[in-house]
Length: 54
Image (tube, rainbow, N blue to C red):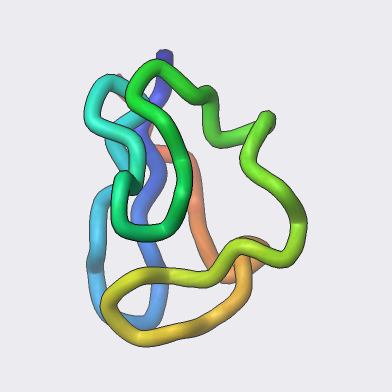
């Protein structure tokens, strides 16, 4: 599964880790995260993330 980077603060969403503090279980693809999820570091919306190409 692809990783995604926050374009504001650089936080990396890794689907293998998820965002346990944000209620996102490990193994959750970025596409499957609810639209109201926000970056756990800076609080911007999901649409501010870009896919990191392998």
